[in-house]
Length: 257
Image (cartoon, rainbow, N blue to C red; front, side, top):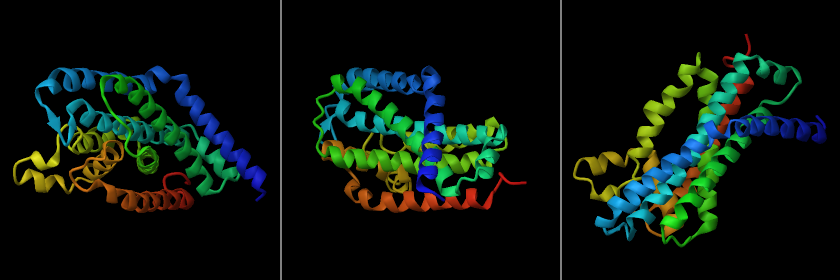
């Protein structure tokens, strides 16, 4: 297929999805900013004053990277879940298959828009939180890489959820009962090494511990799990999840009759 046609199809799909979440920015972007601001004010400023240094930084500085990443991954995940399920429900996905658009392009289009929403939400949280911290960006390039890969990973995961969801209720089950607890228990608010046994060891089974700590390491140059190695593992996990999403779309799972 002509590269120009592929590019136009990809561009059109991305623009459509971006316009979709920007039209409802109050519903899609603002909640993450409000939630992060409340956490920064209540925990970072009021409670954090009595905690002193946490993980080699003030508690506000320690807290902020986790809140930014939380906004990135939840927005990326929710965007592909809802948009892909909506495309299935309204039969838009069938129009893409008839066009025809390759499965990889469909996945890339949905994932790109989700990454853009995730990064946009994370940037807004960062702008709100920076005045409340004394944060010095230790490794901005690595931080951006972790944010992009995390958004991409969860956009693929959200697309998989959108494929298997049977109703709008199903689109929120994973995010509510799995994703959110994993993030909140992933070291956003506390260092894992301060947990008593056996919870400190059990927490190491939570993959979000390493992603959050890798992002914190990128911003603060401080970590409790050696998060720097996540920069090597995260791309592998992201690519693997993307391949699974592509395979499901290519096979027409829950798409083709």
